[in-house]
Structure formats: structure tokens, C-alpha cells
Length: 276
Length: 213
Image (cartoon, rainbow over all chains, first blue to last red; front, side, top):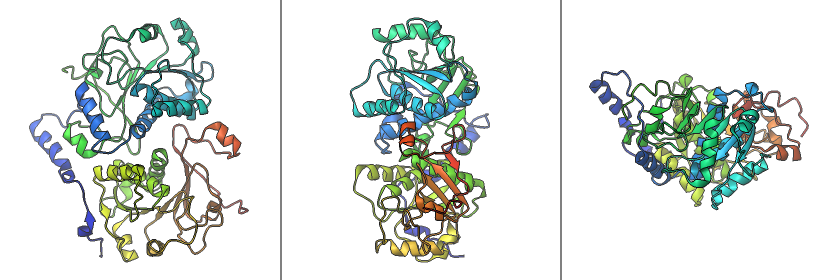
């Protein structure tokens, strides 16, 4: 049977043939059947991002689109639109001043396509083309933007089926800035479920925050962060299905397999290994 | 382009599930043209790789624009091999690849096919592996089609189906590119069907019923 001669192909990157070698080594060295997913530090998270944008040539908006989309998909799995009975599927999306906020804007857009009715809170908009475009896209989808944050938690609880927390992500360093303090304090008292993107906002990326926000859902992006060990909510998902195999191996992320073509996978037992 | 290419990969995976792709460990060929349709193909190839397929890319005319340079580099970073030249005979493709993604020409195509792509199209017409065309079967007039042209088995229309899709005679027609704002849809009276749940693709059936262009 004639086949395409492999010598005609050009491979740029060496090493992917080793893709099973690492798992083999772990197999032999560990008493576990499957290598555990790695929970990463703040610097690892930032380095992985940097490599994705430099060596692997992804653009920020490209990965932000995939990340925000996977957040919307995970949220829809846990809070199906037909069950969101308050005010015709109304939800609130709180977007911070950085990339986590950008993920939130993308997420809102997809939630809108899925039939939810998102309202955006976006107090500090960076004057960068990426964020201006994301904001304009939300406007073009007819999504309202709050001029100011509701002063009392019950106003949010009464109006919104859930709140998406896209305030702060992996680049956060405490303490929370004064303009965001009241937002955080109010959100802590809201009784609607909170769905945090990547990191519960205000948490130390590695040590968490026992007095901080307690989201019901967490969507870790790319890989879970160390603080996710302290997540006590109901649903933990992994999204951002774009990590090249060689990068995954380099950081020994041991990502679980995503089912079929799904862009999210549920992570269970994140609290089993409490050792950071 | 990211959402479009991703939805193509999802639609393809629905029609040709990876576990059923038995030739050479899920090997597939992705032919990318010189424009945006080619870019969609590069994105699609990347997601097919994430889904477990083994894509090989053919990309003879790469535009020297940052967008396409980056998409190409992303494919290299995913260890997707690139053919230096197109296989000379159709059976070589049929034997090696479970299906071929046709991402050569899209909505900006105006006939005739350029000389450098002629042999590619001619060979693809003889390939027996299923052809999955992105947006428009390559080489077809966007409105009138091409009775002598490529006959894909799967067509993934992006945003909205094009007029020539009425003449599509293959097995599977999907709509992808779930990003059209409601006001724009209304402005053009697209009457898009509802996408199921959070799916980024929806199957279109009975495209041939209304044969009038």
C-alpha cells in the first residue's frame, strides 16, 4: 500500500515523540495509577502565559477568547439557562482592570449567545485596544453596563441568578485596591452563587484567603493554581484547552484528558492533596 | 477566525469521530489556501490536534502577515507536520489520510483557480477519503457553485450558508461561527437556526429543498 513518505515531511519541533515517556516514568516511580494534575504557583502561571505568547506565538486575544468561552461553557453546565428563573436568566459579570476582566467580557458575550441575560460591571477599563474592542463587542451584543455597583448585597441576590467574578486573576497582589474593596465586601454577602474565573478574586494565588470571597464555582484556566486546593465550593472546572503538549510536559502539568471535543473538564477531589 | 476554525473542528469531529479514524493513527490532511479560509484551516488543524487527530498541513502560499505567521507558528508549536509538496497522486492521499480538510478558498474567491492550485484541486477531486470544506467548497462560484468542481462530503458554512450551498450534494452540512450579534442577524434577515445549548455548531438539513438562488 503506497503511503505518503514521511521523509518528505518537515518537523520543526523535536521531542513530542517523548510524550509517553514522562507518563511511563511516573508510572514506575509513583504508587498512583495516574499522575496527579499539578497545581501551579503564581510565577509558573505567569511563565506559562509568557511562553504561550512568545515561543508558541499565541495572541492574547486568541487565548482570551478560548478562555472566556470555556468559562461560559462550564458555567452553563453547572447553572443551565432554563433553570435561571430570576428576571429572565439575568446574571451579573464583574470585570476587573486586567486580563481576568477581559476573560469576563468574553465570557459575558458567550453567555449572551447561550441565552443568559448578562449585565456587566466594569469600573476600571484599561485604555488598550484589546479591552476597548472587547467592551465594544459587548455593547454590540446589547449587554447593559452598570454605572455603579449595587450598594447592598440583597439587591444583587434578588436580581441575578449568579455572579461571574472576573475581577482579579494570576497577576493579583494584595491588598485589594480601595476602589474595589466595597465590591469585594458586597460580593461576600451575596447569596446568589459566585463563579470565579481562574482564581477567586482577592485570594493569594498560592495561599488563598480564608476571609475572602467563597465562590460556589471555580473555573481554573490552563492549570489550577495552588490556592485552588483551598476552594470549598461545589464545582471546579478546568478550561483553556490550548496548551501544546511540549509546554505541558515542560511544566509537568499532568492535565487530565478533556472529554471528546469539550473545552472544559470537571476536576474533582481538588482538596485531597492539601499540601501546597 | 479562532471561533470559526474551532467550530469547524467540532463539526468535523461530530461527523468523523476520532476513534473511527483508523488510517495511520487518526491521520488527516488539512489543505490551507492563501487567505482567510486558509487561516481558518490552520486554527481547525490545531483544534483537531487537541481532539486527538493527527493533522498534517499543506500550506503552499503563506501570506506574509503577522496573523498568518502566528497561526503557522502555533501549528509548529503543536508539532503538526507540514508537507513540502502536494502528493502527486490521489491514491497516496486516500491511503494515508482518513479525511481531507479543504481550507483552500473561501468567500473572496473569484474563478479561475490560480495555476499553482490547479493540480491540487484536480488531485483532490479524485481522492476517495471524505473532503470537509470550510465555508465554501474550494473553487466553487460562491453563488452558482461548480458542477465539475470539488464534491465534498461535509460542508461547514460559517456565519450563514452561502447561496452555492443549495448545490451541495454531500452528506453533512453544518453551520458554525456562533458569534453573530442579534442586531446584525436581524439587519440581514439571516434567520439563523437556534444552536443547541452551548454548542458552537448546528446541523443544517434540507439545504437542497429551496433550489432557487
